[in-house]
Every structure is written in C-alpha cells, then in structure tokens.
Amino acid sequence: MTALVALCRAEADLIRRPFVTQSVYDLAAPTGQLSWTPTRPSPALLRDKGHQPTLADVSRLREMSILFTDLTERHGGAHARYALAAYLSDDVSRLLITPVRSPSLRRELFTGAAQLTHLLARMSIDAGHAGLAQRYYASALALAREAADPAVYAITLRAMSVQALSLGYHQRARQLAEAAVEAVGPRSDAATRSFLLSQRALTQACVRHRNAALADLRAAESEHGRASSPPGPFSAYPRAGLDYQRARTLLALGDTDSATQALISAVKARPDHQRRTSALTHARLAETLLRTGQLDTACVHWHTFLDYYPHLHSQPISQAFTRLLKVLRPHERQRHASGVIQRAHTMTHSPLISM
Image 1 (cartoon, rainbow, N blue to C red):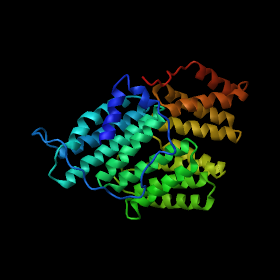
Image 2 (image 1 turned 180 degrees about the horizontal axis):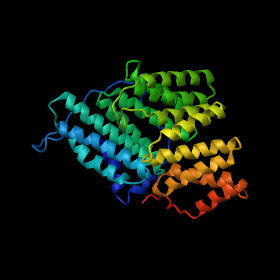
Image 3 (image 1 turned 180 degrees about the vertical axis):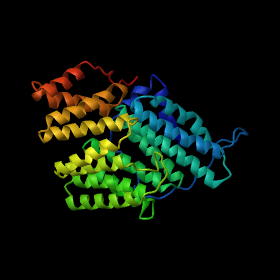
Image 4 (image 1 turned 120 degrees about the vertical axis):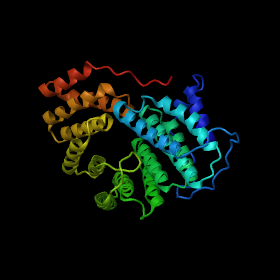
C-alpha cells in the first residue's frame, strides 16, 4: 500500500507528476511470482480511536468501482483519473491501515482497494501513461494477494496481458494470460473463467497457436453459457465483450468473415451509454469491412464512431481516429469516404497532456 500511496501522491504534485506520468513500460520490470499465493496479512499501522471500518465502507468501495467504471465508459479514462488517485491515497489508504477485528471485513476492504487500483491502472492506459499503469497494476496484484482474492488477482493479470499485447509483446501477453487462467483454477465462477479464457485465446492466436486458440474460444463460450454472476465490473462478462474478443482472435487467425460476424454481434449488443467500448467496436468493424472491400458499409460504422468521438478522452480512441484518416485517404474521391473524412476534419480533440 505504501508504494501505491506514493505513486498517487506524486500525481497530485505538479512538480513530481511528469516523472510518473511519462515513465515508459518496462518489459524487464520484475513482476514477482505470477502464480497465485496469498500473502500473510500485514499489521495495521494506525492506532488512533478514529473511524473504524465497517461493511458500509466495503459497500462504498464497490459503489466507487461502479462509478469510475461508468465514467471511463462514458468519457474515457483520461477523465477524472486524478480524482480516483486522490481517493485511493486518502480515504482508501486510511481504511487499510486501520485495525480491523474481523478478518473477513479486512479481506473485503483490500479487495475493494485492489479493484479501484486496477481501475486506476486501466484509466492510466487510456490517458497514455503506459509505465504508470504498469506500476498501478503491480500494486493491484499486491492488494489482491493481501485480500486473499484470486479472482481479482487473475483479472488484473489479464489486464496486464491486454496491455502487453497492445504494445506488441505477444509472448509476455501470453505468459500473463496463462498465469491468469491458472490463478483461479477450474472452480472459479463461470463468468470469470470465460473472461480469462477469451484473453488467453487471443494471445494464443497472436503467437500462431491456432488449435490452442480455438480450443480456448470454445471453452470461453461454454463457460459463458453457464455464467449467472451478478452485474458489476468485476463479476459479469457481457456477451458483447466475448463477441469482441472472439472477433479479435479470429482476425489474428486470418478468418476475416467470421470475425466480421462476431463484430456485428458485438455492435448490436453494446448499450449506447458504453461510449468507449462501442466506439472502439464500431471502429474495428469499419476497418475489417474496409479490408474486405465493403467501403460504403464501413463508412456507416465510422460515422457512428464519430458520433461517440467528441465525448471521449482516451488514447485508444485518438489512435482509432488517426487510423480512420489514414486508411480512408486512398478512397477520398469516393462519396461516402469523402463524407467521413470531411466530418472528421471538422472535429478537434484536445491532446492528452501530462500536467
């Protein structure tokens, strides 16, 4: 927890902030033993007679996870990120260093802290701070160990795999995805298993392990069909998410037609308020359709992407916007493509700046 608080407070300091936000992703950074082993609970540090944590605090942490997940979906991870960092360094850290008599209550508090730290890492990626996100994910893993919560630990390993894959480190991504699946074992809830297996499938496809990738996809589908978890950012796996992951895996395997159908299904299943994931899904579908020569239909989805674009402060969204202009440039004489390009040029998006 000490390292997490130091990072969060460095972000609040205008002088120290650039040193943490501009740090780069380190493939050689030690991640420790990836296999799941809970740690011995650390001693409480605060000895005063102040507020004693209760189940109401646990409920509050869960509500904050839902709140910041929703903010990220509606506005992108670069929005309100410093607010979450401040909340973790002040309110949450105080809960964790206060003596708690109930071991189960203590575990739930650390689980809530791990989930919020995971979300801060995800928001940091969205803001373009890859190295900082890597450090926040490491803190989330440590908190999950302290909470004796293998599910949050595994979900964080999966997120680390997603980040490594996005940076082109395919073997590292596969290693992290494999560790995530192994961390929860076969007795975990079906939604979590599906979520983890779908990422391992993608990493298998990216390293050309076709049979293993397809086997993991089938297993993810099977687990998803059995899932009955309650809604929540760390408990449920939406059908649209699985369809999107299936599409990415099939694209990596060269099956463009099946990937297109999976993306169409994902687009249909995405709720409108999930702007970030909806925008990324429409953008990927448009790129895939263009690859198969369906320019006019691709432009329909790019227009939908542009509907979402002004609302989002997110590096992946900005990258998708840049790709849109690049791939449509050879088609700028076509009427539909010209319309998308002209509309895109009327939009300005403030660059993500580390302040």
